[in-house]
Image 1 (spheres, one colour):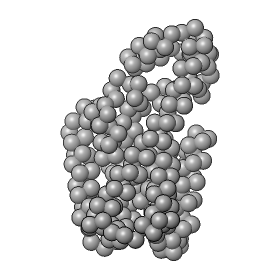
Image 2 (cartoon, one colour):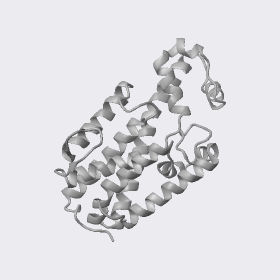
Image 3 (cartoon, one colour):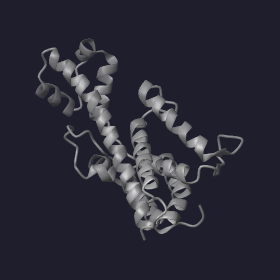
Length: 247
């Protein structure tokens, strides 16, 4: 880890500025910069990038920024400024892509069920864009399908976690035998064991809906960031590109 590298420092500053602005202007900041479902009237194209600088609370930003510093610093020292920033933003964008893709599945599943019952798509969109829903929908498509449908449409995603998961994967592949000292474990654990277990727990929570980390967590965004991080690392290592610096 050590002292702050330049890119890490600038990312920390940007995230903190967004957090302070959110504390002051709250709902307006979330409406402008969180990532909404593309069919939602609040969606704006820049949210694909800006959502990764937004956070939902102090502990959210604290853990993400600590992980950025702890795991990102050795990567930036190894890769250089430009390469680390490219990797970080690519993992964050990949996380957004997977998250939106999963939400499209939930959205289409619910919308198809409602359309098949005779309700027009425009009617459904008018209702949910006004922040409402019809309780009769549960009898049409089932509670799980409608809850997933409404959640996909109405719930924006915020946070750097997707990009951070990409950084975690890159750290684990670059420094697999590094021992991590974690406050909730009595003994150190090597990165090559801890990081895959963490990702597997997120995958379990995303698939089953039983969250081991609490409610309101975009598990598939985490998986997306980890997946894109792995694919970039795999490609770089395969093409002997991993150790080259971009200054």
